[in-house]
Image 1 (cartoon, rainbow over the protein chains, first blue to last red):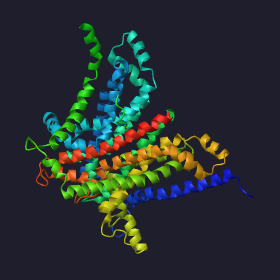
Image 2: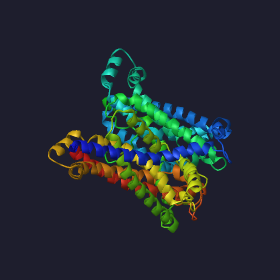
Image 3: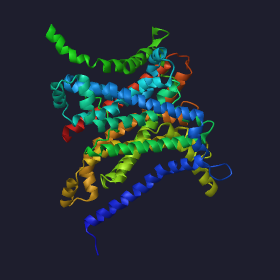
Image 4: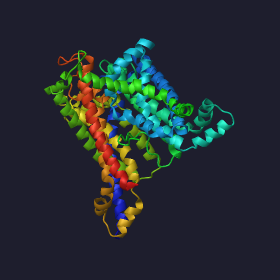
Amino acid sequence: MSRTPRQQRARRLRTFRITVFVALGLFFLVPLISMAEYSTRVNGGGRSGAAWAALVTDPDLRSGILTSLELAVLTVVGMIVLLVPTMVWVRLRVPKAARTIEFLCLLPLTIPALVIVVGIAPVYAWVTYFLGNSALTLTFAYVVLVLPYSFRALDAGLSGIDVQTLSDAARSLGAGWFTVIARVIVPNIASALLSAAFISVALVLGEYTFASLLDFQNMQVVIDYLGKSNSQASVAASLAALIFGFLLLLLLTLVGRRRRGEPAVLAPTPQPGQEG
Amino acid sequence: MKTRARRLLPTLGLVPFLGYLTVFLFIPTIIIVVGAFTDHGRASLTNIQGLANPTVWQALKQSLILSASTAAIGAVFGSLLAYALVSGNPSGLARRAATSVCGVLAQFGGVMLAFAFIATLSYSGSLTDLLRDHAGIDIFGSGWLFALPGLILVYSYFQIPLMVIVFLPALDGIRVQWREAAENLGATTWQFWRHVGGPLLFPAFLGSALLLFANAFASYATAAALVSQGNPITPLYIRAALTSEIILGRQNLAYALALEMIVVVAIVMAAYALLVRRTSKWLS
């Protein structure tokens, strides 16, 4: 029995998909499986969870993980405090500045983090002079780092609601600007805020460039440093962090699934040519 | 007088945001540009001349090779993978999980990806051990993993996923109806891609490849964790210039190197912007 061209095409497509998934799947899976194998092996044979236990028992690793988690929380707070009022304000009172603000928010995508570090070192001399030499001061740099990604998520959320009407209604009932933003707008863009927060958390947990070159010990710096003495623990921590990041992003797609044709807020597609 | 003040008042609401960016983004950029042209407090071209040093030049060349090769690898394999994903169920769990994995590998990997390949292909890595014990193959060789070939391999591990993320939206734009229309007119698969799909997707493909290039060129963490000796690429040269204070007898070489990076990325992004503008003209 001969096949119709359409059936033939479906067959070819299936072969193509299987080939691609198997070949690239192997490329992506082998290193991850190797990490699991490498981090649990014992010299001379057998398996052990010692390297994984080090995630909580090793004092350096533990404090690095804690620092990164604290930084993640502080960055999310800083990002929200800086970005949400500004973006709402632009929509309500200075719509002329919308393109400029967008351009500025996406700017950190086109300036490599490494470059910002080189220039920010003198600024950080002042930051540590005023606030002390704490790793948590990295928050300032991280807010800039997460700006483009958070902006995209929040912009999508704000576009989905009628900011003007909501604020007019609230203000006609006597609400001040703070009430408008905190109690009227924010609850309406909860899922966008959640997306922005997730992306920021993931970015901060994976951040290495700023911390290592400004001499602060966050999780990634400790993982890198530990690699020289206990590479098994480094590999275990890396795998754990990758899995955590994956779960975070999977949750993110579930949160944002109601937005159709979601243009992947993760995609670094800056458009530096679109001056406002 | 009063009305003008009134009109300007709302703009004041932007002051905190602009002030923040000034301190943590604009001033650092200005410091780099000024620093690159300053030596011991005086205007000078010494640092810029330092860029002509053979080792600095070599690092830039290797950086460009690394960025171009991984952009090509990422663009080709990433678009194949994106097409394989797009031809399945668009809201299925498989696609959602795949894009999440791609997101993690593309943007949060950094140091962790270096350790993934150390666990796989270093001297006592899992794959190295496996091949040595069971097939008698020495895949470790003379330590290629920690030089440019290793960087190309490890960078591909985040470039392919990045391509999937940036190219998926373009692929989603190809309508089934176009395919069916072409088929009804008797076009073969090859003819469809040669005359319809290919030309439609080419600008997006090229634009994504440029983004990949900029992304690889700007990457630091993976290379820093993988290569602890020598400065094969520009970002690692910047590390050396930052941590050893004076390199090649120049105090501000790091600023000049950073400026060099800004210039390269700016050229690539300008090309990207041009491409996007041309594409959006006929897409909208």
